[in-house]
Image (cartoon, rainbow, N blue to C red):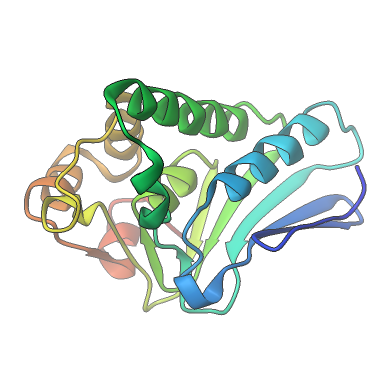
Length: 185
């Protein structure tokens, strides 16, 4: 796998490991369709790569791992089928991350919400800085629903109680609380 550079995503090869950087710090690294396509492409290249033992996912800029999806892209979804197709695309990306044979690590600095939290919970390990915060604040923002597999994965990592708090109360979980339940190191 060669180094991959895109406006939204950087993929860097190091001896024995690969770094995938969400590169939209001015938008808290919110994911675009191009970001998702790049992640999918990187995962496909890494799947059969015997020289890579670890894949590290992180956000550029130090303020956010990722603040979810780029909401402005939702304006192109005009019907129910568009939403279903969008969720299917996100599902393929998350499954590709979860199925990587390498150890996957989410290095979280700052905000890790929405789609960013979905990516982090599909990694094997999460390492967080003390000021990091996690959640699905959609109850007070978009008001939409999450796919069942995303909720299930969050509950398996953070526990049912904290997941309910994230979803129903729109509360962000601190790194200290996340560490207390074993969700991060």
